[in-house]
Length: 333
Image (tube, rainbow, N blue to C red; front, side, top):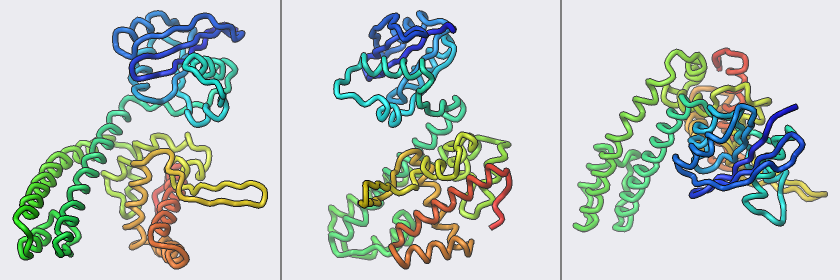
């Protein structure tokens, strides 16, 4: 057996690496800057008998793109599982890089999914849209807050609608508040102009992919939401069970047990936030069209609260989507 194994501990300004042979002996250790020139110099020192592991932090995807052509294989680690396996009281950058290299050498490295380049571009668009939508929602909340401070409750659901603007104009507000609201309304319009072309680009991507058509068979999932869900899943076969898929969506509750003590908390919220958001938003619409989901929503809402009921429906949708994509069949309700 021949080969070399490298673990790289990535930082904002520099990277620390450790290289091992097949017997676990340290061949070399070093440090290089996290910039194009020094990463290129490091990559040129590698060869096709090298396997390289790196924790998925900061600009790790860019880093792997630079070194991948020079090595046998690259391995993004699962950061949580790596920490659990290699927890130590004395922790240094050299130690972290050695742990990754050693776990890779003994074939015990918990790995993360290496996202294809084409999907990364779509994900970047999705996250940019999500960020702009969140900022726009903040301005909408600010308008309601300013009006409420002067005794005005805006009843319109959409604060940027003509109805909401009519309500604002009809009520008495101080000149400074009215000026602030006008500024926020202008910003909301500006963000809308930026969000719309992003949504069009996302919707036009992933043409001819059957999984997107399958997802759209669920009422409440249009093309935009279907592309978002697909880009976060990519390949359903990378999830061994439906529970793991629901966990990836962050829809599994925290549960701890020790002796006769049991603790159940909120959602883990690990994994993909855009996927979780898309499923929760779909749940709002799905309960109106599917009696089974409506019964689930009513049952949980009766014994708990609307928020938990919505999460329960979202978790059920995750299970449905897992089965659909596994069996390659549309949802028939």
